[in-house]
Image (cartoon, rainbow, N blue to C red; front, side, top):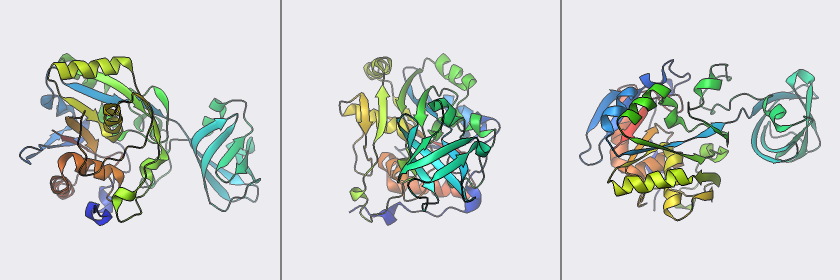
Length: 330
């Protein structure tokens, strides 16, 4: 049995990055070699030294929606809503805090200019003319371990430079380190770049509560791999190039595609024992303990090696989580 406690580690709170670096590609990069367990410490922009001609870099081009809304109840109490899905009309499946808000209750947003009605336990219907007007009420949905309110800078930094397909409630954070200039340098190496879409859902923050981790159920997320990306994947295989997944979301979408689907909803749960079929190299940020994201990384490189790398990152005071540093596994 794979036990939840097997995927634990200790992280000092001060290493959880609360703000992004001004220069995206100035983050630190821990390079982990699976073959011999060697660990190297670089700067992210030096990732070009680990890529070679005919390799394929796969990016998730999902775009984060400003889906966190702050308002108040008619009684005056503060309320927060995270819009998870659009249900049609002006109704949205929402995570509402505090949980004691009742069905039928009216909520006030935008300084009293916009109203919303709780139309079911997890749904708010807004008095807005269109969907864009609803999202204009929101701010970026920073993860709960970032202990501050979203700021203006987060509109840019909590979004990859290549984000184009709206639909995510969390950023595919491994891609936050790339700049347009760095991507241009990578292309100059004759490394191909493919884009796919996986809209990151709230399930990315959902805790694993069962001690037997194989009993955990992933929430479904929409993904789509274009014909162009499929052709680039086939070409990389033909040329013996390596396929690098940028982030756990790209990794899961690629492995879902390996099962024969290029579009739809996936609840693929990758944990140790999984046999990877599409991904040869993996770029990722550092993840919370006891999460499906950490389990995926352990599946790719082995629990022992990942825990060794994480301990070294802690010892060398790397910055952790969404706005933190990165790790390249080759």
